[in-house]
Length: 374
Image (spheres, rainbow, N blue to C red):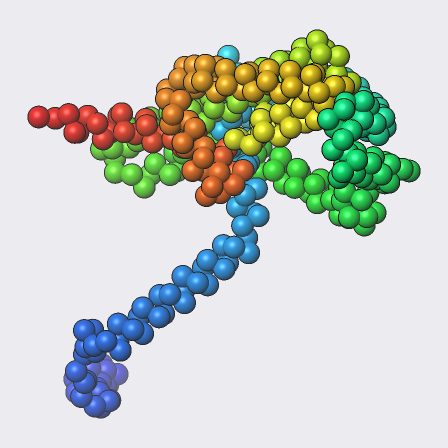
């Protein structure tokens, strides 16, 4: 009883009121129309933008590697989907495609690289003699007497090719060669690992991205996204086919004209054909210079035939392939490649056509139907 009485008194004991600290009276809010406030906010925003731009610039090479890996992943995705449709899981399909890629690279290295290296070496060793043959032409001999062009080229070639110093001098000495090899190996491994991760998790990444879209529009936007990925893959395959066609043409042209090392020349054109816009300019320069070492007439014939082939490829072959695979007009292909290359260089040239195809797809499926509603 006594304990209960004490507890009742404690319960009935009035609590003291909580005293609030006095920090003064709040002042008037900041006038957001004041020019000093606007100037401060604008300056702060500009500084943040500058810091972000410098951070992006310092990591620009990483973003380039990421874009290249994404491009390769979307390019290999159609092959993965084709294998996956045969009843395999995504992981097994990716494994099959990568095994096929490695087998192709091994075959390429074992079968193609040795003759290219041997023919390329023979071409470099024979270059001074081929340049000397240009003196048989009266017009070139007269120009050489005035400007000493052929003799200068011969001395440079003899100096660079002596004791295998051409490659070493090209990369800036022995240390430069080592740095180039290590950097190239690291870059290739990085792109390979990123491509493997991207192509394996591509469906999951798309599905996770679609979670940000409202449920009523999720199915349609998912279909459009998958169509865009399919078009990028189709563009990669189309570009490879076009480059192979150019290499086959140059191989036949070199064999018919009797140019030295036709296989090496064709492989050079194959690599150049994968480069947007300037690829054929480089290929044409290589073919023409090698043909000029035979004679002026062969050089002119090689130049004219190569230019004719490029025109046929640009206005007949490429538009038909792009129209069938990407549904992109020829004019849009050329203009988009020009704009992309001017903005982002080689990466922009690679991404320009599939981006243009994606924009055309969105216009056809989203914008134009709304505009056609009466």
